[in-house]
Structures are given as structure tokens and as C-alpha cells.
Length: 317
Image (cartoon, rainbow, N blue to C red):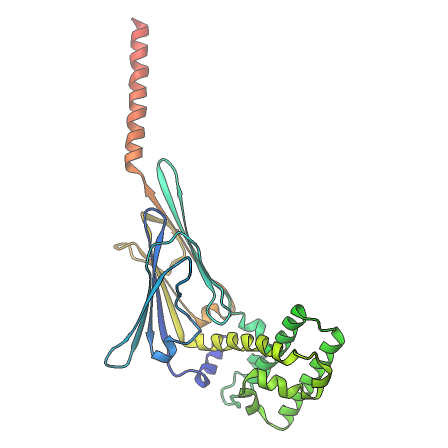
């Protein structure tokens, strides 16, 4: 089902973006990250996949340039190595993390890479969308279940944050259902292409006097955030992603799509279909043998062995 849903992108997107994330792990356990995104300028500066920005923990350097064919390239580089886990949790952008760890012992050092791309949960958030996947249908009809999700989720979040009794929630739900039925009956689906906050306000106008004073202002903030998340999900339909990592030592375990034996580079690729209903997890483990310590330990054992033999010889005398 989810693979068919890509047709929705036709109504939102005109281009596609290729996103590359390159990670280089250093021997001390720190790492550098480089982001490269290629596509139209408008797609590179939107919010569905944001390059990191500088904060108190990390400094990032970003450049944006185009070639003669108006293909733009956005590049963002971490200015200094970091040991911190990178967490990107903005709901209006792709949510993921990058975690590198190092565990040392006398004879060897282990390096671990983990990254989790958060599940978009398309099937849970917009379950009714599947009945609108026939491309011959009115392309706006599928917007109704999407807006219903945004409204119901918005009211749920509002109730948790502010005071709103169950009876008022029931009245809001009833009014929203009546409004949606009216839109369907009058074939006004085009109205649902408008901003969700405005639709919500229009739908609940009959209840305005009985709702809290700042209800619509506060709800607009909640609904706008949910709308941004939906726009992110649809925008991601045209994006593709590739993660690559270089780790010290020999790879011991990984779920990478490709391992280049000559360079030691590990590659993962995924797109919207891979994260629409499931998380996408990446991991790798490499091992560096400490040859010097092994040789030193061998020499120590050899000297101890010789000492034991020498003592036995002395005792025999």
C-alpha cells in the first residue's frame, strides 16, 4: 500500500533531492560528518531534511552553489570532530540520530556505529488514506482523512496541555464530523487544501463562544506543528538518502547494503518507502588489533617462560 502512496507527491513536489551523509570515525573515537544534498534550490532549503546548524555544542559550515544546469548542491561539514551523540528530533524534519562509541582493551579496540531513522508512521497517522490510492479519483479526497487526523491529534495534544473537559471535547468532535459531512455532501473537498488552522476555525465557528478565550490561538500553534509534520512526510516522498561511514580497523559486523573491501567504506541507502511504516536502523562494528601490545605481551610471556626454565635448571644443579 505504502509504495502506491507515492502518487500523492505529484500534487506537492516537482523535483527530487539526493541526500548523502558521510561519516569518518577517527582512531580516538571522535568522528566528522559531511552532508551533501543535490537538487533544486527550493527543495534544498525546505524543512523536510534539514542540514545541521551550529549551536553551543557543534559548529557546522554550510555552502550552497549551483552549476550551469541550475542543479544546486548544499554542503554542510562539521568543523571539528565530536564524540557526542547527534540527535535530530525536530518533528517538522526527518528525525534520526548518529552514535559512535569506542571500547578499548589491552589487545584491541572496538568501534561501534549506530543510527536510527525514525518511522514516519504513515499507516498509523493516516490509515484511511489507502482507500484513496486510486489515481483516477479526485486527488483532493484523500486530504479529508489527513485533516481529520490533524484535528483529532491536535485536540488530543491540547487537552493534555490545557484544561479542556471531556464534554467539550465531545462537542468539538461532533462539530468537526458534521462539518466534514457537509463538505463531502456539497463536494467542497477543495476547501481541505487550505491551511488546517483556518479550516479548524471555520468548522468550529458555531462553538466559538462556548470555548476557552484563547482556544483558537493556542490550537493554531498545535495544528500548525502537525501540519508541518505532514508536509515533511509528503516532501520526503521525493528524497533519497545514502549514508556512508569509514571506521578504523576491519569490519566485524554490519547491516550495511554495501561494503567496499578495498576502501573499507560501508554504505546504506533508503527512501520514503523504507521509513514510511518502519524505522530504518544502521549499525556497524569494527576491530583494531593492537599489534604492539600483542608483541609486547608475547615478549613478556617469553621472558617469563625463559625465567621459569632457568630457575628449574638452577634447582636441578
